[in-house]
Length: 413
Ligand SMILES: [Zn+2]
Image (cartoon, rainbow, N blue to C red; front, side, top):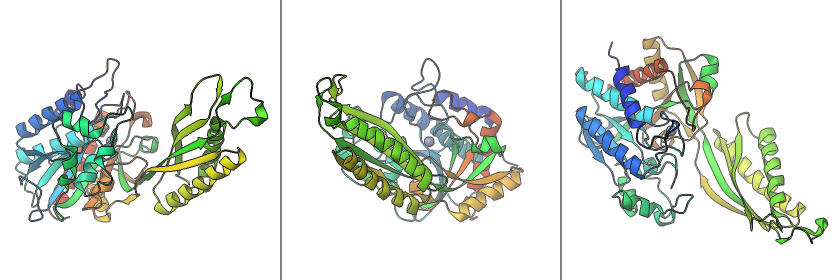
């Protein structure tokens, strides 16, 4: 039976990990940065050496393909891929695995002259981690790029247009990356689970049924800055205390009123003016919520907004709510899930269906073709940290499942 080469895949994972490598392990490789652009050039070289046709689209998505020199509705392709950007101080597998396993699959198919009725292609999508805009490249490819690229910026203020220009791209042309309708027959992405469920259950392969939607909003409590020594306690309108109250009540609300898998996080808090001797006049919180059910997510967002107003009344101050982003939960294709499970049965691997608690490019691809995802266990459920890892055997199993899934889809499964 046709199989991937684990030594070759491992050596490419190690090679890619050198771009943006950190002294203590792990990697920082944000999209459009110098290490990212060096990694892109290396990836293009590897793709060409493997005999693939390559191109980079206006959104910076990098492609390698077998059986077609472009994506076109005349020859709908079976697509795989993931991303080569990382979060700051991230691991070496998140994204890299899906891109390099995809490349390995295509290389094996080519070397073995294995027939495939549809073209096969592998993509590295730009800025999946959203330094400038989450899932930027796949959104552009799927025609889902909304808003003004001139306003997109990194947390440190660097503008997307400048970062892209520095890397040789024109952000204002990114929407031109939109793929023609019908050019993508199906999309399968191999990814680490980034959570503990598969490892704890002792199941080698996860078949993703749905990908969570993520809501992010900025909640700003506006009170009154005052002298922290001379203002009597009962007269203070402390914006931070309102924010803290909101954080605790929003968590309680999501835990008790959300679904069994709803999660919420407040990952950024800014207090103004930000001095120990001033009562905070303004507190800004970035509030995020996730759930695989769009109805639950919509309801929680409305209820948390009402909660913010209630908290503001209680603390006698004002609140302003600004939506930042809202992705819709995506259902994976039944056909792709069944094809993955058939490949696993052929390879003698147990599977479990699960939902993805993290956002992925596959949720956008689900809008232009049949999309699905294959998960392998993450050691200790660790991800978005420098010690993120999966067992070599788990990587090998995942890549072989990807290979047989791609071939089945290319032959009309
Ligand atoms: Zn990822």
